[in-house]
Length: 243
Image 1 (cartoon, rainbow, N blue to C red):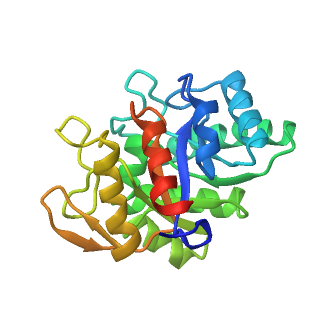
Image 2: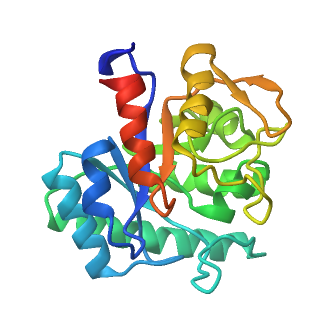
Image 3: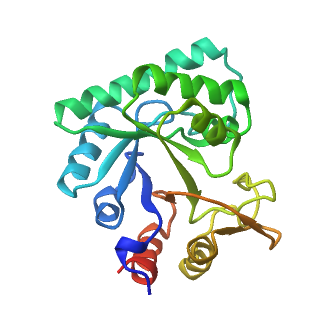
C-alpha cells in the first residue's frame, strides 16, 4: 500500500459552486479550485470557500470559465480572444483580491468546463490562457490536461504547470473527456473509480472508455465536488492509496 509521501498526485476538487458539501470534502483534498464568477460564484461564496480551505490547510486556486451561468460553463462559447482574456483576467483578479483579504496565496489557476476542454486542443485558446498566466500570475501553477496541447505549449513557454487527470471521468482514445451527455462520462461508483485511479497510480496509464490503455504523466488528480459520490470516492482514494 502506498504511503501519502509516495502517492504521485495532489488531490484537487472543484468547490465554491453552491453545494453544501465543501466543508465535508476539504479534509480529504490537497487543493481547491474555487469558482470565481464565470459559471457560478460571487464574493460571499469565494470568501467562504477560501476561509474553509485556510482552516483545513488546503491550497486554493482560481477556477475561471466562460461567462455562462445558464449552462454552468459546460458549453463551448465562441468568443473574441481579447474579450475572453479580459473576462478571465477579471475573474482571476477578483479571486486573488479575496485571497489577499484572507491572507492566503493563490496557488494555481484551473480553467473550468468547456474552456478547459477546448484549451486542451485549440492553440489560440491555450495561448491566451498561458500568456495571461505568464504576464499577470507568474507565481501560480496552471493546471492542464495531461498529454494535451495546452500542457505542451505551457511547458515550452516555461510557466509552472501541473498536469491533471480525472479520477471520476471517463476518457476517449485521444485523452479528451467523454462528453457529459453520454453514458459513463461521470464515474459515480467508488469501486470503479478506485480501479480507474489504480491504473494511473501503478501503471501511469489511463484506461479509455473503449478499454485501451494510454500512457500518461501527471501531478494532480481531480474529483468533482458535484459528483453525488464525491465524499465516498475521496475517502476511498485516501484509504487505498494514501494512508
